[in-house]
Length: 264
Length: 264
Image 1 (cartoon, rainbow over the protein chains, first blue to last red):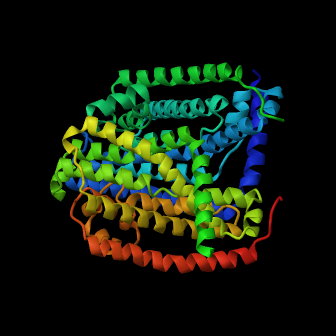
Image 2 (image 1 turned 60 degrees about the vertical axis):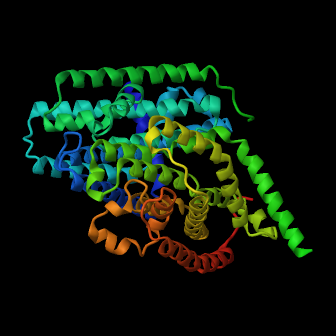
């Protein structure tokens, strides 16, 4: 592993994919409007929920907004990195161009997970940050160093879990070739990350923390923001994140053994 | 003679598309699963007793969301994505030579997919009733008939809107981002996530003039026998179809004049 080489390659990736994406300037504008509307829509939905009941799953409206902020950031990250690259992986496998990736003197997972970038997701990430800053003000959270590091750690863990989930599904492409709809399933499950885990019934809560750990992705970082999270939960999230990263790596290497090129 | 040839045209079109769709059973099953968001929403509603203030009992609300799931399953439209791919790959040119508007092909594709999807939707509904046996009911034939028609009209409205957007492919390469933008109000205002009755007054005052509540809320209320204005709903659906159809015809004829084949 040569870190400098990888950084240099990544810079090139950034350059080429930004250049090609900026061709579609109006698209970026439309994506920004989409992100704003989508956030407005989910705040609207939350306000409907909270109109009928002051507290949902132990969360007040102002606190639930933090979850929305974190979800928006993570969704932005998904749209910036995970989604465009996943599309590429499917294409690579269907058209047999994965051969060229495997032949390159560079780690294949690195190449296919970071090759592309979609700049319109940045705006969504920024939107999420603005919402978070607003939430910090209205919830009167005082910032200090330990708080910020904890937030950073949990968010990085969430990103790792999210990445692993996406990468797991894209890896299955090697067997199933078309995984478009599997990602749709993941997307719809991720949607519940917009709401506090405690607002669901017990069985769903178990499902979303054990089988698909969506609970970890947004709820735990939001609890850290509010200073409500116990230390064991944070540790658990770190362990889960590492487990996911590790197994998605192993799974990719295992799947590659089954890769037989398409007619090329 | 002419009617015979039209009949055989329709028959062949459906037969081809149906066998085509049967090839992708697994994907369609996954797609059906990805539509289960209404059930998560139901879980939030009933788990937090949010429905008390809108005077809908748990049972009626669960029927509503089940019907919303059904209506959504049979009104999903993706014509923009197919058309965008076809036009980017230069497949539209051979379609244009044929004595058949290419949108008939997409239309048949959608209907064939709905037929393929039907058994999966039924299986999901059976699971729903296993978990919520108290909400089991059998709608009478008249209601079943009316709601099938209204679901089909809802599908038609969405198909027309998306076809208009798809025609924009003739001017810009990526029309699908406009579709994603339009999907956001559809998601939040159609009643998929919360019944329109629960919306605040300032939204309810204008929302019934837009097509959104007639996409899911109206057919779902009809099917689950919740209170709804049957005649008003149907007339608004038909009105929107009558309004959208000429717009589609105009953009289509303007579009093909603009069309220049790519890549073939």
